[in-house]
Length: 278
Image (tube, rainbow, N blue to C red; front, side, top):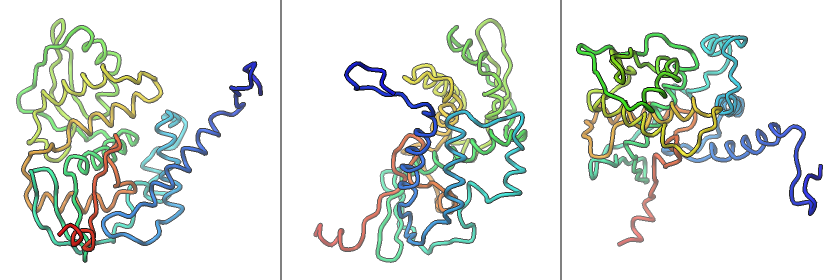
């Protein structure tokens, strides 16, 4: 046990079990948050499965060869992404302020929904599920291929992680000495609002400059980065139909509370808090 003369450091024989216990305890506590008027207790088995599934993915323990497929798992187990698909809330759409925050009213409470953070969480769950299920039809082909010039460092990163790009939904070929030709991008909604070339370069920049470089979490970091760069941004216009779609999809997520980087998706104000301001 003792590996330090002053007994300031110890080592655990099964360090992973300690890490998992702490991770699951914190995640379980965070998933008990209220979201958009929800007060009922979550299905404990469903929540436990979701936490264990996410932990295995984040620690790169998902066995792609020997484990049965994720789709098969969905058929034989509880859906790890959806909560109760029948759950609905009655809300009043009040508008969007600063082209960034969606304002809705639920009973006597007002919610501000960050359109970027909310969409980022939705895309993260969607892309991660597609990646784990090895979904083949998750690419939207372009009419005219996009040829992008890369630095040597960027090209090497793409070469080393080509399979990762392809599984996420990029269809690309190397073109010339330091260029790639992108024939297709991940098939996600609102892509017409996003500059595809900028998204690809932003993903590369984020991955190459990220402070964390542990190979174990490169898949998780990549998926979170793609979700962030592909999500609608602050300042982009959304219509009422797009807002409703985003809210309904958030309601079905097991973890709708924050984006993958930790920013809250919603902030709640009750009637009393607002009255106290006047």
